[in-house]
Image (cartoon, rainbow, N blue to C red; front, top):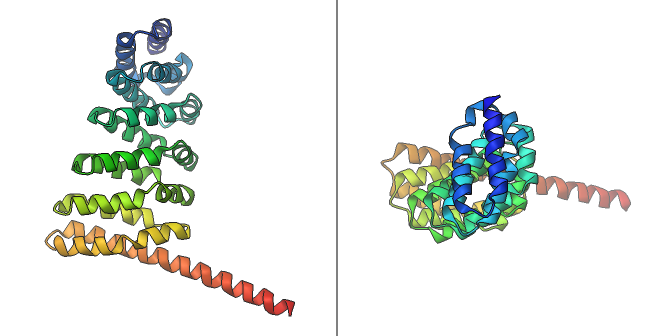
Amino acid sequence: AIGEGCMKAVVAVMKAHLDSDLVQEEACASIAGKFWAEGAVNFIEAGCIEAVVAAMNAHPGSVTVQENACRALTTIVCWEDDEIDAKFASAGGIGAIISALKAHQGSGVFRHEAFKTFRLFARTAENEVKIAQGGGFDAIVAVMKTHRDSTAVQKQALAAIAFSAREAGTKVRFVEAGGIDAIVESMTAHRGSANYQLLACHALADFATGQAESVVNVALSRCVEVVVGMMNTHRGSAGMQEQACRALASISQAGRRRRSGFAVALTMTRTKQEESV
């Protein structure tokens, strides 16, 4: 195929001129913008993922290389292919993006692409775990704290969280990284934006849905006061009120599940004690 041949040629140039940041910039831009329609298998067989990650590792200080490389990875990962996911993880794609996110927080282009890649890659529970174990939540929370005054950055972070922290185990890791506290701080900092409060409450409602460990429920309980406060502040926003009610309902249900589980465990313990007497 023409696409595969072109990509193999680009990858060969990237390998031969790994030290050239200009070559890596243009090559990553080519992968991101020209060959997306040729099929997932071509990206794999041409070795695009490994080449792009190598470019990121070879030029950590070049924001342009990092931006174009992350755009290329986003283009590749959006195919939602199991083999691509495996290649992305084994090549060190998650670590490369997280390292660049720490070094280039000031780049809006890179943040956008990095968070978008996380959202796409986190399509399976296994991939969610890989993001969490790789330090993805720590990186997201760090960005939220550094750019707390930027509504745009906070929205990007919320979108990444919504897709990357859906499983019980990853929710715990997000809480441990300070994620819930970061959301509460962000809601407080942007209390005047009804649209942002809507998105934040939507994220909290989704996060509180499903099974969760007690540490998650305890963290969510700290959100109730700020959610109620935002409901009072934005009484005229029907959309915000709807999502706030969803958030409060989900948090309440999560708390009941935790108490119910505790009651069952306590009953079983008492039964065993009585049987042993």
